[in-house]
Image (cartoon, rainbow, N blue to C red; front, side):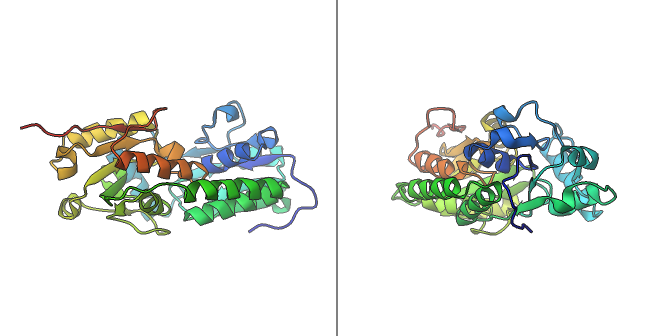
Length: 308
């Protein structure tokens, strides 16, 4: 929950990568006083890090899934916040999220970290970003800009993003598309990802706009028989997603793979994070569905059509 501030905050803490990206888009990098362990914006390097994960990010996908599932069943938070460091920084604005307990720190985790400290957090503006759709992401951008005292710039950026979104030219052949936010085990894309597929002209075969991503079985995926498969594992860039796709290539005989329609994309930049990159993500999908690899390493065709 947020409340109005008398003055624009001069010290901002971002506890999720998408908020860090949005803050730099808003020209507020100089006010950023601390970030999460997963904030990888190049201009945020060297800032104090206030969070850590209980899950080993270097583990295999199956091991990460198992660790996350066990922690969730036990009621354990996946992240911890350095309450003493947060108190020492004494921010005027703390940005977190309430969309996904797996993706980033939630307000409850912050409250637990500072519960027994006498410092600043009760007086700070804690903004929880909640966008689960493209419209929701733009609303979050406006809310962040308003909380930081740059309301007009937020409105301008949101309007420009909407113009770009509306200008995307969809393909006309409407291929059936499966997006994979995890491969082992398979999870299909949710939240804004189905909107990205549909804006590009595809038919999203699993998942609905505004709803959570979910687990699927390979039997279910085989029965759906998608025309195109896009690997966009959450938390990874293009190279790692291409690696996951190559592993999938060796394990499956799905028609999309045989026909050369297995693709990898930069999930961090364009799909996983509720930031302005999702607009570019829909543009990338439109190019992908036309069979084009984009310049700038946005996506990669992993499989080639089988030859007889």
